[in-house]
Length: 203
Image (cartoon, rainbow, N blue to C red):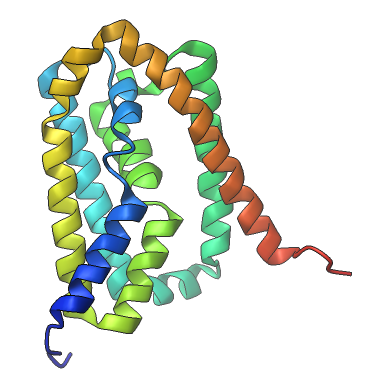
């Protein structure tokens, strides 16, 4: 692969676009609720697993996204429907039970799903990465992913401060409130995916 010159302006644009889509700051209350009851060490290990998973997914799809989709015969809109269904199940369980039951089984599992995928990296982040690769090249895409994931890791490493402010009850309340927003995002994912296959006004 030929080495392309680095365009700083394109890099800044790519970093901002990906950071907005990943939105680690906006997800802090959700992550706090998902890891409620974990020890500080377990919580950090979970977040690290999530960041590793998210980074691996973005780099994989940056390198071979189209080939992967073609291999399995699926589209990003199918990803949106599947990811939306998973998020909807998660949100309902948090609203009903107050937390996600499976999280206590394995911190690594929680780090992979739902923190790594589809909360940190979902169809939107994957699409953004693939578009950046096509428009700005591999070097810019690699640097953008690295920078955004590094900032995300720093935010999650310092989430304990927010957790101490909110407390256990506060985190539980926020988790239920945020679960409603997760459900709305899930439904939007599903609707967007369905509308691609069955657009309004289609005969």
